[in-house]
Image (cartoon, rainbow, N blue to C red; front, top):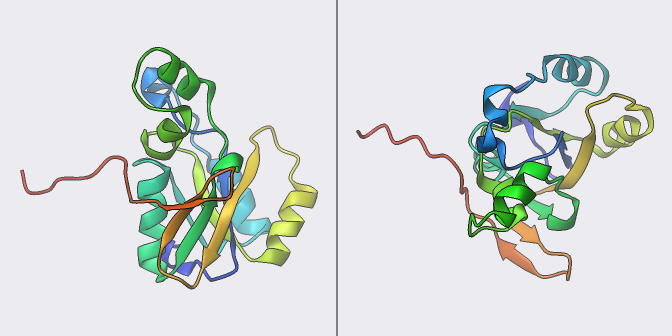
Length: 165
């Protein structure tokens, strides 16, 4: 499953919860190999990768490779307790900002067509939660829709690889 297979109308999904991994979770994560294998054989994602650079950055990898855009629903993004703790302890960022850009979560980010998404929702009984967080669009923009219904551009923030050094 490549990054380049996302199609307009696909649902956008993540495994687990995001953000705050630098509190130490990034050193003791569980690779989502079992979940990825199950998704690949039972649900046939159009595109998939693991979140290592941050949700916003890695989502842009899928969008660019697939030539599509996305709308993320902020209220549905699963935020890890570590992101709430980092925010409460003076990081200067909200839990949502941590979930969007911290990186090293090593959770899965993937797209499914509507029928596969419905099957996933109906049949997924796994300890690792799966959450639908948005929709792939034909528009090339990446947008974050807030709980009050407003939409904001979502740049590819997160870890960037600077190969010029």
